[in-house]
Image (tube, rainbow, N blue to C red; front, side):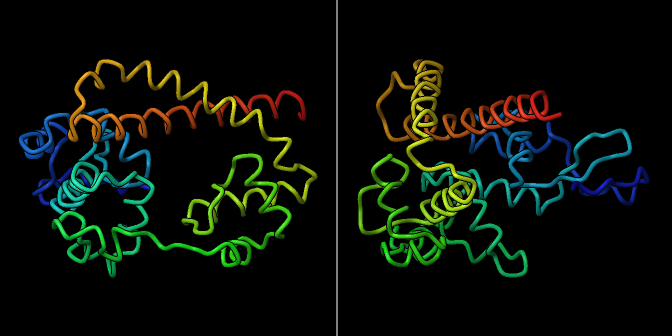
Length: 232
């Protein structure tokens, strides 16, 4: 939760408004907007303080963190989830150890996520080999022998669902829904994707991730509403 700043001059000294942050960062990141800053806050990537009136105030460390996030998005094409994991793993909040923003090669340990063999994946998620195979068959895991952390998270969720009798084959409608949602996102990005250069593709990927996260919020609300309506 964001910390509320006092209204005295000393507590406000050195803190920046959204407009001032944009003025600092926009020369390097011209696509940055107030809504993008609010979105990064909603995703837990930055936590500005608030005045008693509710206005966001950003410290110099907040601005440094934002610059690092935006650099990792633009130059390393990392999704926000991966960026957040890197930021949370920074020792003592020291961001200087994150190499992505410093232009290190893609074989850096922080740029290359941890990989799991199939047996390691099964053990990490507490799953059975049958569930892993069912998840692959249903398209929830890649048909591969090497998996990333996201596969561990997905398989762990499938383990919990299976305990309530929900098998991967019961969830194929989710994949269909995801494909339909992507069609909406693709349509929304049609203007952005007219140029086929690296920078444009990076911006499209970043914006698609943002739209996906907003859809997650709406989808979760709708599901909670249905649950409340039918189980209350």
